[in-house]
Amino acid sequence: MAPTRVGAAAVRPALRALAAGCALVAGLAAAPSALAQTAAPPKLKVGFMLPYSGTYAALGSAIENGFRLHAQEQGGKFGGREIEYVRVDDESDPSKAVDNVNKLIKRDQVDVIVGTVHSGVAMAMARAVKESGTLLVIPNAGGDAITGPMCAPNIFRTSFSSWQPAYAMGKVVAQKGHRKIITVTWKYAAGDESVKAFAEGLQTGGGEVVKDLTVPFPNAEFQALLTEIAAAKPDAVYAFFAGAGAVKFVKDYAAAGLNKSIPLYGPGFLTDGTLEAQGDAAQGMFTTLHYADLLGTPRDDAFRLAYAKTWKLQPDVYAVQGYDAAQALAIGFKAVGGDTAKRKELIAAMESAKIDSPRGPFVFSKAHNPVQDIYLRRVEGNVNKSQGVAAKALADPARGCRMASAS
Ligand code: PHB
Picture (cartoon, rainbow, N blue to C red):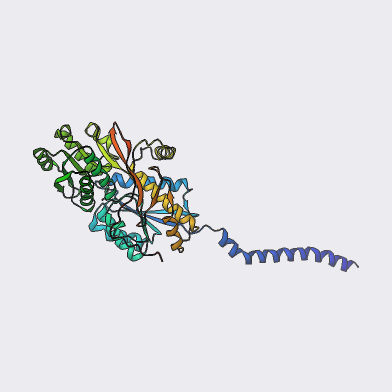
């Protein structure tokens, strides 16, 4: 019957429409979970607490550049989460450190803090994150205590301890036959620890420190010290300075004519990232560090090329340390798919990581400090050229570290 037929004909599209509608409704009902699966996860907040002003300003920006380079190589994501950066200039000022680190922890609620250069500031940061539980990766500050008595599951260091390059240099200076040495440094934790570890290495080879000279940080008026060194005529001088202060010290030392008669040694900070500014004054100087220019390995060559292309600058040790901070975090976050709640697994992945560093591969010690080769370098033109390894796979003694288990 027509009506039936018409009806049937009319019903079929109606049913189709209903079926389509049902599918739509079902689709809509399914939408929230489907959306949840495809929506981008929240961004991962990385807080840089670094010196962007003062004597260590160049060090801070090299660290940030190195970090960002590796993050870019990871597509701007760690563990599938896009990275968002927050920056605080710590001015290398320990008196502002607590306020600055709290800005990142409490105000910005970052997932991880990357910082800093100055050991006095870094100690305050380590204390703060021990309380808050925030993950902290230290891309420079060498303060021995940080991976000593203050060691903690949520604190990693991708640089060095003050002890490492200094102890190696003490041995080198003794092997060169120098016996009576004067040390000179800024008066703060990193400088004090550096000269102490140097003396320890020196003593193993029969040398001794006859005088420790200091100036307050970041003072760069060195004339009185240089006059004292000239009068005392030691066999050699060991100096800890870095950044703009290192440029000034090496130039003043040469301008006083001391480099002609009293060789100047130091940890590599004395001549890293500084050579263009130091010019002739630094030529021929020997230093020890966990990095050297032109290592000639495929890994380092690739890093240096990528860094130069990206930033139109040559990398230095600080850039490497920042790059490796990003490498360590990329490994940790990848292991937990970006889920920071899986803290134990994240820390375990970082602890067992082998970092494919431009300096050469390294692993973390139980105290979370790199176990690494220390190179002897010599300044030739604008480079700190490797003379070979002064100390192989050197681990910081981590005196006083009792590592708690991650929770
Ligand atoms: C430090 O304060 O630990 C420090 C600062 C600058 C360096 C090295 C160490 O180049």
